[in-house]
Image 1 (cartoon, one colour):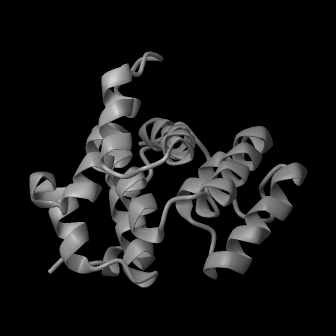
Image 2 (cartoon, one colour):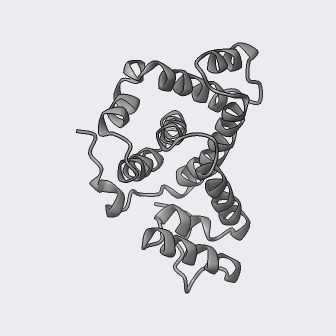
Image 3 (spheres, helix red, strand yellow):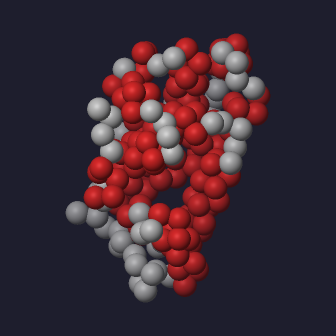
Length: 181
């Protein structure tokens, strides 16, 4: 049982209402994680801003999925893994790549595997990312900008995975239609 309220447009604080409306405009519904985040207009606004920025960063759709899903896996957030698998599949990321990412990351293509490992390093860094981790990412063909964009993606997903753990966010039916097979 959650201690947090899942808001609607009507129950949300006034400053969260336009943010929730933007979720409706983008998804067609309010994702349950956003409904919980709405209690804090500052968190919801920051999360949405970071999401929009990461969605337009130097990484491809497939690479962004690697960052989001890897962070969800590491933070033990089933909601993040399922929702971003669904989103990635609907944006053209292959089910094979998504399956490898969640079940056998060592079987990812070399460049995506390097991104997976760097994302893990960032998510587990506790504020200190090793120079060797950065060098390995750069050696795999990524740029300095890509490395910094991974930091943005991990930060954005960390906001939601922390919220989801506190609110015990369940996976709504919309996101349950993903299958990696």
